[in-house]
Length: 287
Image (cartoon, rainbow, N blue to C red; front, side):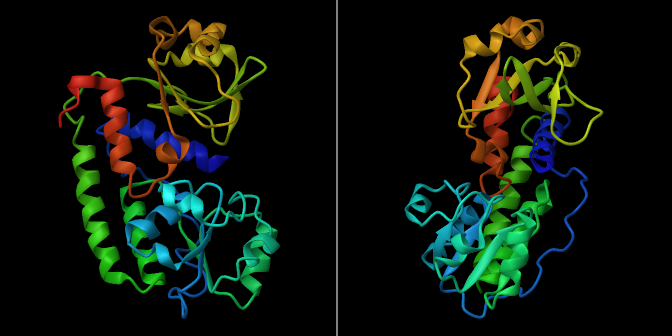
């Protein structure tokens, strides 16, 4: 849950300052635990949507024998066996595909399952999750090294680095920044969310906000995922009294994006920034 908040905050900082992803966050424990290069990279189980995307972007998708349920892009990934949600894995589910190696995003779990998998004879590489520009490039290099595709990883990292820099510069000249409220879900009329552009600040973790806190945040835009559980229509969203009382509610301004696309921190992140900029600032965002 905390990881989701950190991701949303990075996008908030990106949209609120210079759209720069280079935000300082605490790093995970270690870059890659265990083996850093698979002795046999022929049958890899990829855990984490951004990991699977990177493998495909490297052109190494033929090595994949399984993916987790967050790995929904590209469409070809859906043809792979699904071993379950990355945070609710079972050892039996992962081992059932007989992988020669496991490539898992930091935060995969539960811890008990990861501990069991690390004790097997199957190499387990844990890829760090950093919510910034350099973190994305690090992911690419680690995945490439694990698969023995260093040259391809260097080329992809250079390409993504250039795209990220261009995206970060896209709104550099905009002075009037939008306040964005990232709403994860609404249940029983209550809002579960994370803050963007610091429309909400001063807390850590994943919390339910009171009506007063939403009104005080004064968001200009509501940002939501369009595939996170039961859908909430625009009419239902803006019928909420607290949201209706904000500038976003008065203007009925909501931006909806695919969850994996919005929060993946992988090869498509530069595209996400560009799309968000277009949604928030329209023609003000320089190409």
